[in-house]
Image 1 (cartoon, rainbow, N blue to C red):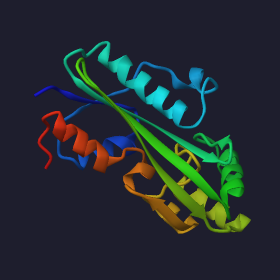
Image 2: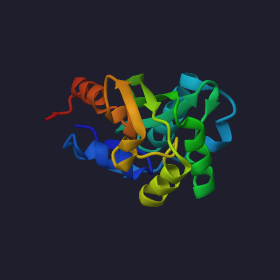
Image 3: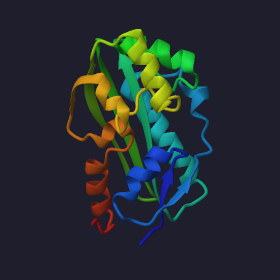
Length: 191
């Protein structure tokens, strides 16, 4: 069985992949995505970034199976990245509150013989929020490393009226239903 490698520095993705009970290494990709985010938009962007992250690991670990993922969040044509600061998180939630936005997680499973590239989407309707609710949420959850400034796996769930997706793990960043199916086709024993 080939070594499975998660091409990510995200704790969230590592915790999600652990749920499949398959041994894996966690290696941060050498591909610097920030340099390329202005080149494409939407699913084209997430597909490009997921593939490039996986390829950067496969270039070094030729006999492994690599999983990389990228997530994009859009409200109309505006992309929401990780805010990194309290001020940007507040601004993002003020824009998203009361509106419906779209999230797409694209993953790439890559080895020397196969390339699987899939995108799973979610439509999220955030409820109307007061400034006090936004600030209180940010102070509690500190979602500075989360695109859209919310953690659905934590208190962020309280910010929403509805969520529509075929796989809720898509929102956390790694669509496990689809990934587990693809890993089984490559010979990984899940469960």
